[in-house]
Amino acid sequence: MDAIIRAKLSEIEKKAHVRIIWAVETGSRAWGFASPNSDYDVRFVYIRDKKEYLRLEEIRDSIDAQQDELLDIEGWDLRRVLRMVYRSTPEVCEWFASPIVYRSTPEAVELQMLLPEYFSVKKCAQNYIHTASVDYRTYFQDEEVWLVKYFYVLRQMLQAKWLLEERRMPPMLFEELLRQKLDDEWKDYILELLHKKRTSPELGKAQRNKKLIEYIGCSLKDMEQEVLSLKEENKTSWDKLNQYFYSVLW
Image (cartoon, rainbow, N blue to C red):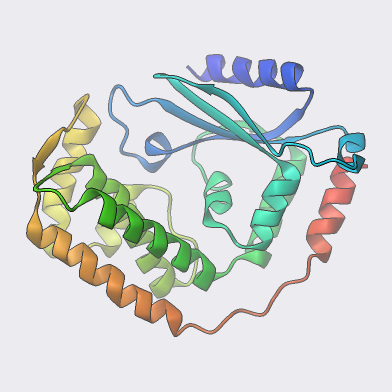
């Protein structure tokens, strides 16, 4: 599959007239809880010809290359990515921390080195808590719930907890987060589900675990209050990102 994905990336470059500088696996395969039939979530960063960035009209800043049962491939323009870096968007940080890399270039490695300068504990934690809270309200209201949703909500929750306690970006692997940050009461239960997820095509639904859902809800509410008390980090200048962008284009 690795060779197929790399070939797809080359096809995208030719078809869209772009240069891909970074491509990685995201989603369940990067987080360590893929099922045998999980698809491949490939994300990439690309650059257009410098003249494209001087056009008066807006240019599209993403490429939806493929989405089917096997491959989900999407890319973002470098300018869009740099704006997200400035806002300390955790999704970009995760792209550059993925353990599965399909394409790496010196330009991307240089950008990777800049990420810590724009990293904000408060912004990243707020993002994870918000996403987990939305998913919590969406997936856990019925009497039966999809078991896999526990992983997605817990992952976001534990990432926020890691940020608030460690003051640095959390690890990508869900199991590492689980073992270090999940309360002992729930570790064995979630580890058992994790084993089933890795070995079964589909976990399916089950009666909602009211105590677990209550634990998640209370944890999110507590962290919402904690993150509000954090001081805003000093705003970092655009200068280094601008200089980086100029150097890549010219």
